[in-house]
Structure formats: structure tokens, C-alpha cells
Image (cartoon, rainbow, N blue to C red; front, side, top):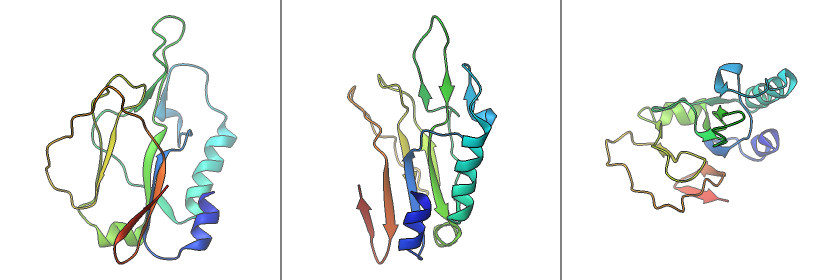
Length: 143
């Protein structure tokens, strides 16, 4: 999907959401090891699309299975990836993992201005929905 989107857009862009994949074994704690070929395919998809993981602030793992008995698992499944052009044009860009609410996902905030705003207060019904953004004259959210 990333390769297809890259072919449709040659400007700066940002893609974020729950990719349901990790980039390395360090992005998972507990449970069975992930298939190395799937990890490699995700990594190669990012490289082919000229995208890189932009990193984050906060707790590493944003998803947990909530099985306290019989195999607790945490993973870094959600992330933001961006083109080098976007990273250059938004040098204060940052991604922050917020405290988990009642969801099995932590909220993730993407701030292209890098300002120290107060964290939003999430209600108990927080849901993590993937999306991607095209940056043109003004940002459009396409979902």
C-alpha cells in the first residue's frame, strides 16, 4: 500500500496509523517472535517509499493485549513515517505517545509545529484509527 501511495504523490508526505507490524524485535515484548520476513517486508516497503520512522517521545509500546494471565504482550504497532522533504520542511516535527486510557492502544499525537501544548484529555472511548495525510498548500486528511 505504501508503494502504491508513493507512486501517486511525489511531494512531502506523512503517513500514520496502526501498521500492525514492527520494524525490529525490540519493538515487541512477550509472546512468540514475529516472522523476520514480515519485518523485513515492512522495512523494505518504507525504504522503497522513501519514508522513515520519525520516532516518538513517551512509552515505547503503544499496544498491549491486556492478558495479565497466560501471556502479556506489548508492541509498537502504530507509528508515523514521513518523507525526508517533510522532515526538512517541518524541523520541529514530533510524535508523542500519551498515557493509555481504557483502550488497548495509547493515543499518539503528531505535532508538526513542535509546540508544548497541553495534552488532550481523552474520554474512555478513545479509538486508534489509521489515516494518511498529503501535504500540499494546506494539509488534507484523507481517511
